[in-house]
Image 1 (cartoon, helix red, strand yellow):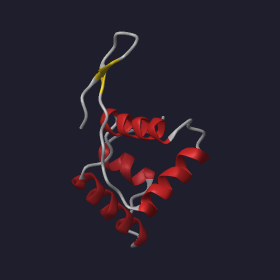
Image 2 (cartoon, rainbow, N blue to C red):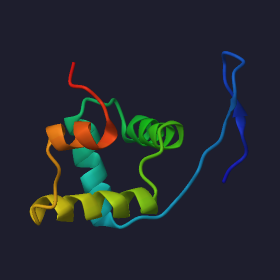
Image 3 (cartoon, rainbow, N blue to C red):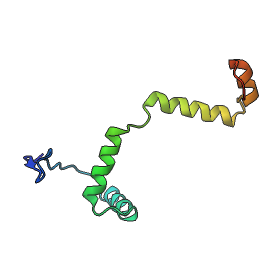
Length: 93
């Protein structure tokens, strides 16, 4: 990582980060940012990283639970809304 530079507006310092990835993955990134209207690859990567930090996605346990739920649906192991209301003592009103 290179030395940090100060923003013109007095905000957070800016740091340059270097990382390696395959050419094929870089092509996918380029297709994505251009197709979604970003002005540059860097803008897209900053947006994506900020989004991942501010709004983290599922952890492993949550993904496993989703997969198990999907399997239950495919195997017909489901409960109707009426059965769920009866089981949990709620009303549909």
